[in-house]
Length: 311
Image 1 (cartoon, one colour):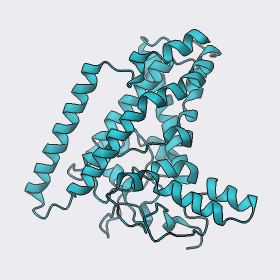
Image 2 (cartoon, rainbow, N blue to C red; image 1 turned 30 degrees about the horizontal axis):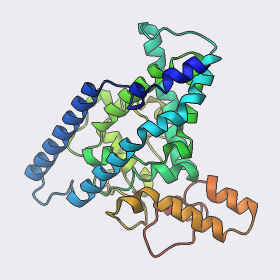
Image 3 (cartoon, rainbow, N blue to C red; image 1 turned 60 degrees about the vertical axis):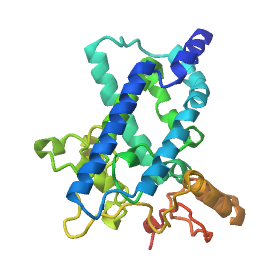
Image 4 (spheres, one colour; image 1 turned 180 degrees about the vertical axis):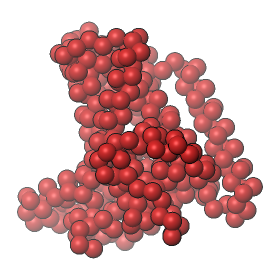
């Protein structure tokens, strides 16, 4: 087991398990697409409906913080992945096309449930709400990712893939491909993609996922595919009679990266302090966001209150 831990914690693997040249290439391509999208949006929407430069700057600062923390996150998750892989049930070759296809489907399935839980369990929403805080949907919003994913337990969803027999490196690589694909669906400039809309999570579907309209909340959780949403009843088309609105429901927009990153954690702390019983404290931590009547602060917090039962 120790050999697996050492390999997972190797310094060359802490920075995303990718070659530095590849990382720089991906970064350059992402920046190029951000600039191109901005120029096109200025050309199409002269009032610049799709961008708020201050909000985009906030997203980029949060993205920098997220990447600074990645090496420390890798150290945190290396041991559970190594333990799971040490006791794996099967051995899947990372070079086998069939194994790669199986890992793609398995990772997509697990990602769906992880993403769904991130919306329905407040402890996880505390991290994921950061990603949903932008009020404009564009490529800069794609890189606004929370800093506390491992505190929320995100990695625990994917550890069973290593226990089944997929190498942790292969799992991380597949999730990296999944997230890279998702970068390109954070845009309002893409039209519908015809028959692909039935299978893939397209920009059209992801706009619904990010929308704060009541009919769009908690919909379209897929990463690359939309098929699991169709299978498990969480798929939704865009409402034809209303304009999509983005951002957190009932929450003031903030350009402060720290407030965005930790706003929901602060709200949880306030609610825990005000709770009077163990049952209520557990509901504060693990019930769906908005299901507990909140103690609000005059400053920004990240409660998705529109989904509170009975409201």
